[in-house]
Amino acid sequence: DAKTTQPPSMDCAEGRAANLPCNHSTISGNEYVYWYRQIHSQGPQYIIHGLKNNETNEMASLIITEDRKSSTLILPHATLRDTAVYYCIVRVGQAGTALIFGKGTTLSVSS
Amino acid sequence: ETGVTQSPTHLIKTRGQQVTLRCSSQSGHNTVSWYQQALGQGPQFIFQYYREEENGRGNFPPRFSGLQFPNYSSELNVNALELDDSALYLCASSLGSGPQHFGDGTRLSIL
Image (cartoon, rainbow over all chains, first blue to last red; front, top):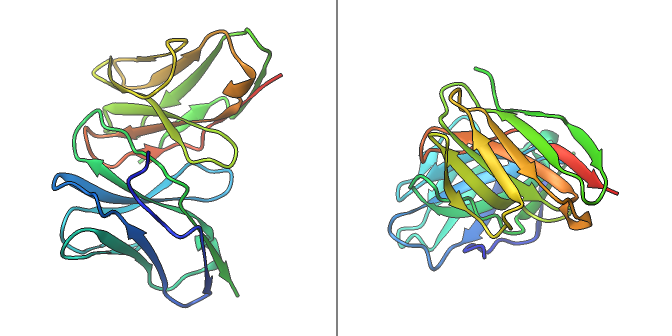
């Protein structure tokens, strides 16, 4: 079973920041937080991952709380193309381990 | 940089038949994972291959088998197809335990 809890759906206006929360209260010390998204009819797209520190790349920022029990994915300026299902996954950083997908959050960006 | 490519994109089979799906990993990646995604669900881990050997397996019966070749490409074979095998089959490649990058999948329909 997935070790994360996410809201089933969220709405965001185009141009505004989208903040997607994720709860992972049972995360272990050696587990990373990964974010993927899946646009209809495509494979999941890797967004970002982190262990303890906040991370930023060209797509998004990942904010992890100090106790690591929750995190937030931030899309700074959402566009219509960001409409997708967003998955938050915790995974041990070790070869052979799988990504365990939950139901994710469906983000709808509207103009 | 060439991403993950899968073939064919769509396939129709009948119950009891056998099917082979193919995946070319992203350049520089040495590990391949396979996932099954039923309609409306998140992807489920089938197995992972590293150095041409199975390196982790999910809760799938033995009629799901795979191969990895020296060039790191991979095949997923499913024998004795059942109606419930209808799904999107996703391949993901990675460099060791790094982030997995997905192809757009093969849509398999069983009649």
